[in-house]
Amino acid sequence: MKRSFLLFILTIPFCLSAQEIEKADALVSPKISEVEITVGGVDADVSGHNNRSIQFAIDAVELTGGTVRLNPGMYEINAPVRLKSNVDLVGSGKETVLKRGKGVQTKYLVDADYGELKLTVENADGFAIGMKVQVTDNENSGCWNVSTAYITDISDKVIYIDKGLIRDYRSDQNGLVSNASSVIEVIDAENASISNLMINGNRDDNFFADGCNSAGVLIFKSKMITVDHVQIKDFNGEGISWQITENVTIKNCEISGSGNTGLHPGTGSPFSVIENNDVHHNDRDGLFICWRVYQSKVAANNFHHNGRFGVCTGHKDTDVLFENNHIYSNKSDGVNLRGERESNAPHRNTFTRNTIENNGTEGGGYGFSINAPARNLVLRENVFKNSSGTQKAAIYVYKAGLEPELENNQFDKHELGKVVFEKK
Image 1 (spheres, one colour):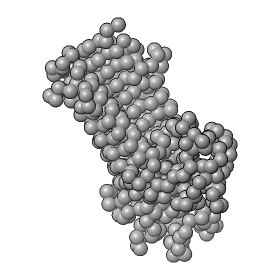
Image 2 (tube, rainbow, N blue to C red; image 1 turned 90 degrees about the vertical axis):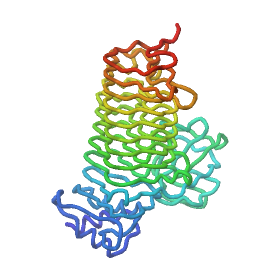
Image 3 (cartoon, one colour; image 1 turned 180 degrees about the vertical axis):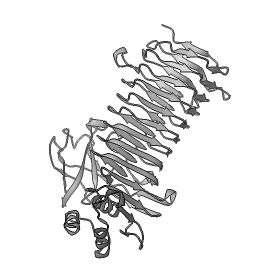
């Protein structure tokens, strides 16, 4: 039975030695708790240091569940590692580094149409079977307008893909295809985890990856997923993005140097837990809570030195508790409630015992800004510090906003005042 299972796994075209295959075969067991495969080094069950070796190990325990343990070393990632249900991917700390390989990009010469499974490109050099690609043009370059798919074949200047395109893309409107993609992806999975490793996004050598479709870690249409003690640095896109999920926990992670937002939960991702993370020096927001993230918790995090807001929330992001966070030295507002109609506003959110300090480092901003008619917004026992003088107001309420419920907050002196209302 074990031999037939291994032959099933070997239908995947990974280049592994006979010795590695034999070791992996011996490890397949019907007892989930006993299944563990090690990757990386001559003494490991799978010796390679690349995404193919990691993927082979994950696929080998897909039917039983188990642990894939990555030994110390540098792993070259040229296509996303795809985590499966009931599999724990565990590194050896910061000595386990998954480094994104070099990016490649080209123009397509013929319009790439809805449902099409091929791309006729200017230059296919650098692309390879198994890579994931991103397809865009000027009109379709963000979020759900971007197509992603895996390369199944390449013939001269034609790249064949496994999934039909989702838009009509025009070659004369800066039509591009690149291998911009995630380092680790969790798609249509449950009860899985990633822990104790580092991801190096190799930002300078990669093209920008859209945040709804790719990230240092992308979690999509999945539930009961945990990311714990993972450091992600210099990914040319978002650090961790989770979309259409339930019960995702991100804890004890460090996210820095992202070309977009550090953390991005959205598109209906309730019951998220975000705690004890250090999110800093990302190009956009530290935490961008997108659409319909409700009944969630954001606790004991540091959001600092980000390029726009420390925390931004808005569309139907309701019933979220923010407590004991330190939000400081972000270039614009510390916390921003973005503009929404009342029916879609972020109602019933509570901010308690947070320290909001010295934000607005690039020309001024606010500690906390409210641009939506959010009902039952409670600010309790927060500390608004302003030793740098960059926060123009501790709390700023735009015309479209509603006054929050304030309870026992502490305020340093601010140029415009503690609570300031935009003139109507």
